[in-house]
Image (cartoon, rainbow, N blue to C red; front, side, top):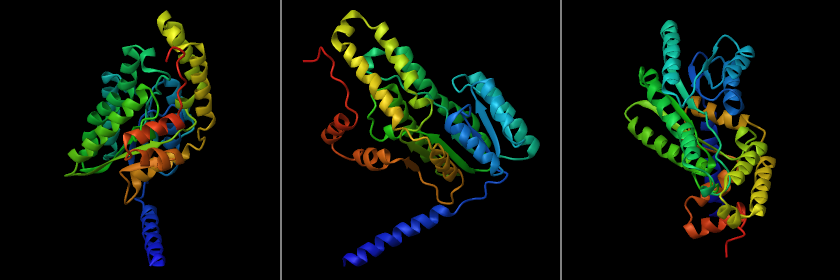
Length: 321
């Protein structure tokens, strides 16, 4: 009996593994990617270019666009676009639409990759403007980009939309606006998939753990923590204490140390979402997401609270009794 169960499980796993290897030919398909200045978006854009795709790689900065264009073929179009600016998005749309009309082509895929990290520390350290900025980039930007470019995918009624979420959306361990923005992005993705159920356009979420990008830059995060300390009221300083600040700075350094430098693991998942015959709705990437965050998402809250204290222990404020 046990042997039968083991063989059945093995057969199911083998079947899924084989199905995962079936892919659509990516050659000559048109893909738009946001956030291609550096990091995962940059890696994905270069990879798709080499595979024969036509890539609209949007970059926030002119320097990023020029740098990417220099190392790419003429199939890649590096375009400036600020996803928090409606005029910038519309200008990029006009450019993409013009090229598609000239090529008599349609947009196959959209990858909402651009994002910003959260501000580490406790929630009351940061003013409303900080959270507004995070939500604007990580949630409202992808929503508007999707709304604007969706008609180019819908022209033939088929294609893929890939949203870069995070493992923290499954079980938020990080106390920052980043977690909130990614939870909301997952809700948007699920609802969008439902709204597109009568088409052949599918929606997918990428849920990585810590990877070595600007999102895990310890120096940048340490500077933000110091900024928070300098802006605190005296009562906040008395409550939290300098030791609390130093411990959180140390946590950001540990986060960077355990971050995976293999960005291709994320870009490979994005490629599978774009071209797999049987793409997943969610792509958990990394052991922390697969074996901790995902299982924890269905556990009782008191267990998850305990896991948070063990896995991501926050320093105790000196004024907390």
